[in-house]
Image 1 (cartoon, rainbow, N blue to C red):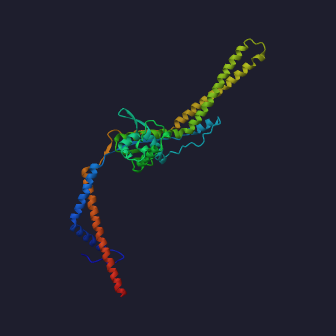
Image 2 (tube, rainbow, N blue to C red):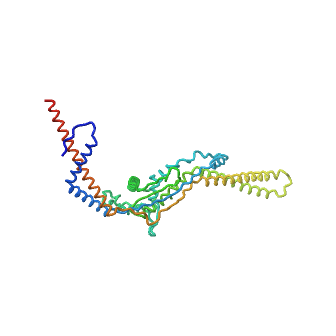
Image 3 (tube, helix red, strand yellow):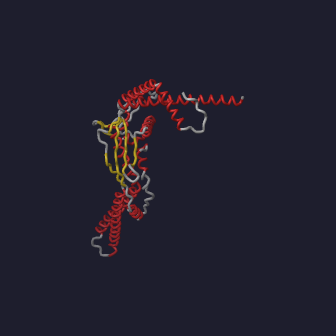
Length: 370
């Protein structure tokens, strides 16, 4: 065995080599212990491989086209003619990375879990499929709370009517999906407008339907949010146009009625009211035509500014399957076990060396004090 190491500010390469040599000799002496620990690790790896369930990965690729053209200025100018202000439209609220944060938001994930689906010809929702996949009702049956034991998520139940227990379970499932993570959403690069949504679960139907319904819910919410202000102004202008159309119709009816009452009038004053109504009718007609043209231009501008989410690749069955194989579990478990055994013996070696050095230093101090 080597002599105890004296305290030094630096350690040489030769000393490192000698330490490694000593550790190698120590491991050779205790090789059966290393083999035993590696065998235990391999056994644990094999058991883990046998007990582990396969997971299925569904990936959906999409492209985002959101062209903010000069048509927004056209919308503003048309709306301003009738005293309507577009205000600040949320043009950049969901741009860039914000879109991918939206895809992992609690609101959209809950809407995705609660949306109706068809499985084997039966109507259901994704949250019930999730609950059945991970056998959550078995755990709920052991709960002390009766509302948890009897918890259900009926199809098409209004979100506003959810109980406290239902809200709690929804939040728990959302946290699991995000923290595990089961769901990831990211862009392929900063230069591309192509993104990928990936969901991993123990049920391939759940994985497939989740990404498909998530992109559907996200697209609806995204388009609604991006065009909300413009569509509100469109509806306002449409209501004004309908009012002008009503005025025109009333003017036409009134003119016809007055003309019938004075068919052969001798005095010119008798036809004044008819002329006035005819003038009102012409003004209302020209105003209505102008408003109709502006409404068509406004609608076209809204359609041009509506963002387009184009699906590129959808997941198809069978999905990519991941499972820890028996051989991989054996090799990986054995390697980890052997490595931990070597690490433990190495730590023990350095601990003994450190203890000897400290005792030697204490003896030297005692001699100096004497």
